Image 1 (tube, rainbow, N blue to C red):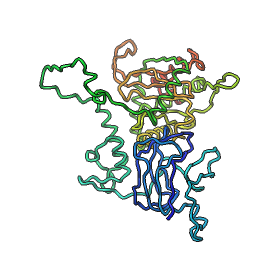
Image 2: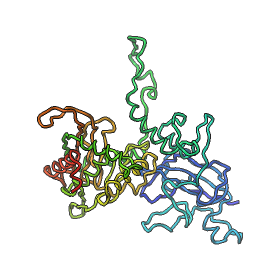
Image 3: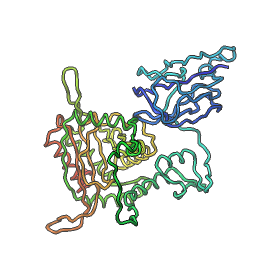
Image 4: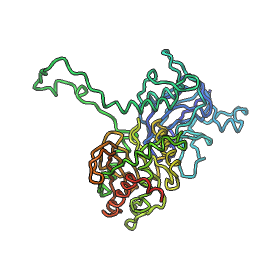
Length: 447
């Protein structure tokens, strides 16, 4: 009986290592070609690796949580027949498959090699498995396995989720909505007051030597998304001279527009929020100050400024995997409904951990919505490859002078950071002022 060893492939992202997140098989399991073997996390996305062989799982060579290099052996499959073998009929002629891992030369033309795959092997980000029946837990919660995994990732107790599925099952939307609501109140919980008014804690003279270090400190490995984010932020902060500007704005009319859109049949099936108006405002303002959408590019002869006549609008998203910045391609071509739909899809995909590397590449300007965390303003770091980032602060009622009278209005702060090599002070100020003008009077979008 032949045994094949499956090696961690290069998934075509130019990466050298990945973390084993979750095995989908165990020793003794029967697998077919294209069955998902394992879920890995690269620095850019979660990827499910399909099996290039059919047979019986022999040994899992790497444990969950381990980081391995491309080309490392991760699993063996006994009695293995590859997809290419089945197609050519080698098995019928009694030929044994080569026990060495085959290097696939069938790629996408970019020179990447899927180490350990046969010629027909493919890697897809977040491959969807066939529909699985809902599973009823002991407490009576009905949910499909992917929904249970999403709930675990988001820290949601399924027993506390109200199901809306046609068969009484918890849906993906139920879990995401519950997580969103929980995040609003998470920071509002107040610790119980201790019954003891005072407490004396003796501090030995040699406390640091007497107690083991692991009782006093915790070490978190820097890997995956956190590792790449850290590198990008350092590279950006120390290569692009950042300048930040901000202004307060009366966003009352924006809030009124959002309210009307939520009640409109045209947006009945789409989530509408002030972020949608900010996104439209940024697209509108870029037309008036194109340099904020440009990029500083180092060349052999020095450097050049590349002005993009399209907008791939990045939206910074806090996800269970860390900070991601997927972008909406060609946002300048979308109407209000199209942009709302794209924002909703981008947000849901990020929360589910399904953002692909392609979704994060090619951005031209970014929005970070720090208002969802209750922050008024900030000095964000520019996403690498871009020259501007806009921060949207929280919108809350404040006293505001209108026609000489102090009135309660919905006020927010629009801030932004810019690469001063590309954008001068007048340009960045005009751009932020334009975004603020749209929030104050959304009718400007009608021109």
